[in-house]
Amino acid sequence: MVAKRIIPCLDVKDGVVVKGINFLGLKEVGDAVDMGVRYAREGADELVYLDISATREGRNTFAALVEKIAAGIDIPFTVGGGIGSVDDASRLLDAGADKVSINSAAIRDPELIGRIASKYGSQFVVVAIDAKCVDGTWKATTHGGSVMTDKELFSWAMEAQQRGAGEILFTSMDHDGTKGGYACEVYERLSELLSIPVIASGGAGSIADIAKVLTEGKADAALAASIFHYGEIGIQELKEALRKENINVRI
Amino acid sequence: MIAIIDYDAGNIQSVGNALSRLGTEYVLTSDPAVLDGASKIILPGVGNAAHAVESLREKGLESYVRSLRRPVLGICVGLQIMCRRSEEGDSRGLGIFDCDVRKFEPGPDCKVPHMGWNTISNLEGKLFKDMKGGSWVYFVHSYYPALCPDTVATCTHAGVMFSAALRYENFYGTQFHPEKSGGAGEKILRNFLEL
Image (cartoon, rainbow over all chains, first blue to last red):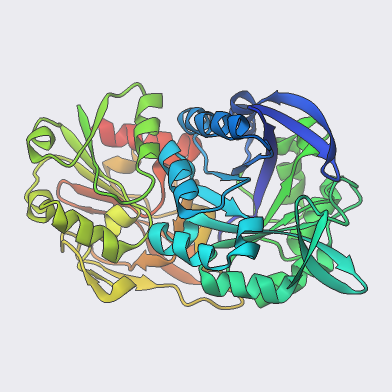
């Protein structure tokens, strides 16, 4: 049986890993390649690198960094942030990325999902959705949660799957950075609706939170950042605890 | 020298990176003259099997690969196009492995792609020297090589047992990605290099 995956997420700005709370107030946490190598050694199943640089220089730095990451780590990694075209995706593929994650650009231009998937396969395309719950309805947002769109989460996730997404990475902007647990009911519903894997993101504060989203929340993978970056939970310790709960993880 | 066949089939740089981490020199090429100089050949591939086999044909390498008598390792789609045929685009493969490639039927209990780490069992032969059944390796695929006489490792996803690796004479193939499979993958690549 395929194992539930544990995925540390590294936000990269101008070549350096940073972490903010609710996408605001950034703090430097380390070197992108060194951290990736360390996580891979500790048992991370995959890594996600998100480029949050706002400038062209920052983006160029990131592409060069992807090559170094690909040379250094022996587990799969996804890159995202600012991918707006097939050319952007091609460049990152050539640099050695295993998957690209597209977010705002897919909302602006949903056909982009199919264009990338038909060229490189669905396994290469992760559609990331940042959503917020407003008056009982989950709506996708862009620009780190600050801009609401008219896309309803569940129908947008279904559409992304039909267009060729290989995975859905859903972040609850209401939970991200709070360490109060994942939006489990939302993941459960997404996972039942979709036939592609669902990655849970936003809200991990404890081992119990991760266990819950992988069982009750039926997520295929759990992504987290700060709990790993600040050493609050070791990946090995986490996986041993999950195994004790009879969750199928790779140790 | 190891040659990696360069034929526009996705992320092939990662195989080269894995060889570099093992301290092995390699060349990325589609030129038969260069391939002739290699002691072993790797046929990588991600994405669409029908496109990949078409691309290999366009480069005039179909019969070249089939005629090789040195160790050849097909990875993922590289393995699939060495099979008889694939349900992906109803494409004809090189027919090296006595095997057909089928589609996983997506359903509530069958997530497709089969993506992530899974265990391999029933390991046979030199590719898995000093390895035990139950090793974890990384898979990403929506089509699978069926069980067949050439099966040398198995894996199960959503109740379907399929070939995780194949071998026929000097031809080897892994459906998983050894270059992305941490320590276990490194061991398998090393075993291939030592053939």
